[in-house]
Image 1 (cartoon, rainbow, N blue to C red):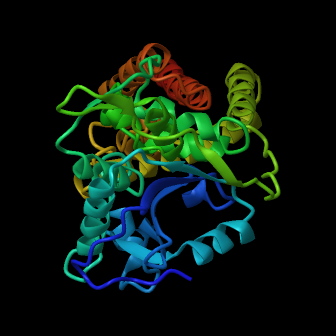
Image 2 (cartoon, one colour):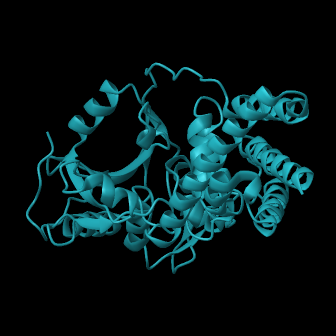
Length: 375
């Protein structure tokens, strides 16, 4: 059982520091894994884990603060034994990378973590890309060896934040990917540097494994030893749901058929009107939510969201008036659909959103046709 020394008391010469990387869990907030730092000193009886991924569900207005990007996370500290027991219970994999730090650097890291654990410094404002449970340990390690230069060795294909977070979601979490593609704006399409890639725990593991550090006397060495797997994954895999691209492609086909057949049947015209009006209302409300996430929250990644072009609040006006909508409103919305479609194809490949845009385009085109026939 690890114990905590009084602040300022140094560790022994044999103390080590390591990065723990945890695999994904079955809850969505665990999908991207986790990082923590371990300080191990057998001489002093210390075996502690520092975890920047803790939060308090009992925080007043928890979900409202989370939605607005104003939820504080905090540094947690536990024994290595209890940390491993939790991940073993959840069936999640854990790897350890021992850091090639000098005894002084390990001690510096330990003292910084203890300082960070003081009540007045423990909390921090969480940001999914810029300040999270992976970037905090990364920064603490960097600070511990601030007198040495680092060199990235890993050559990777340039990828954006959006592309990186899509990788863990591509098999069984397509609906969550759809939500992320919908919520995230242009900042999520920023191409990440190797340091920025480490907002994802698994990327931090790979970068640390490849990284070299240089000392003032010209000595070069790897920052971390090869990872050792401490726990294997035993959790039940998530069942795969119907992919959203299949659902919305079927919806597009149904609306297209209604638009073709509605001229031959008054009943089909009424059905098409109900379907299109429902889609306009839902999309317009989504647009209002996207505007709130852009202007009403502190989230870095939800600003400048081009999805507002197709999930437009203007659709609420069109839903009320249908073919009695002003001609300029209908053609303006069609133009917005076209721009959104081109953006998705060229810059933002999201297979599930494309059939939604095409379906809405058909619905508005149907109103334009009816309006022209009634003139």
